[in-house]
Amino acid sequence: MQYWLMKSEPDAFGIDDLAGRPGQTEHWDGVRNYQARNMMRDEMKIGDLVFFYHSNCELPGIVGIAEVARESYPDFTAFNPDDKHFDPKSHPDKPTWYMVDVKFVRKLQRTISLRELKQHAELADLALVRRGNRLSIMPVSPAHWEFILGLE
Image (cartoon, rainbow, N blue to C red; front, top):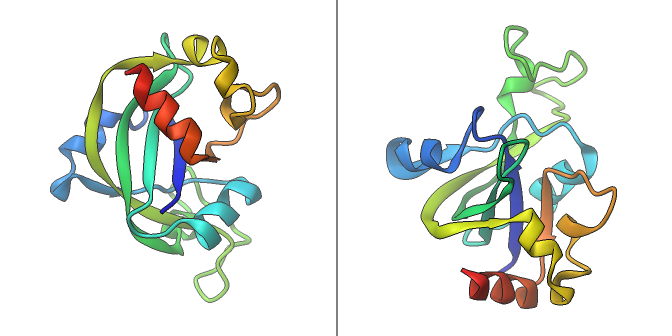
C-alpha cells in the first residue's frame, strides 16, 4: 500500500462533498499537471490511502482520509468543450489526462494545518512543506503518514 496527499479547494470540492456523494465515492478529475497525472495513472492503486487536503482557504491543511477506490482511467472532463477542464488536444482514443476514484474514509478530529506541519523537523522532507512545491497530488512516506496521524 502507498500513501498520498491530494489537494482540493473546499469551495470547489471539499471533504464534506466527498462524504455526501453516493457511495461516498467520486472521481478526482481536472488534474492538469503531467507529474501529478503520472502518479495517478501509473502509481495509485486500489486501497492506497490519501490525506485529503484543503488548499487556498482560510486554514489550509489536512482535513480527512480517503482511499483509492478505482485505478486510473481517462479523465472525461477533458473531452467536454463545456467543461472548465476541457483540453482540445486530448481525445478519447488517445487521452492525455487521467483520474482515479476516491472513497471517503473519515474526517480528521481536527484540521492539521500547513503551518503546524511546517513546525515539525520530522516532516522537513515532506513534499508539501518544501518551498516551491505546488503539486496537487504527492506521495507521502509511511513514516510521514504515521507521524501526521499522531498529530491528530
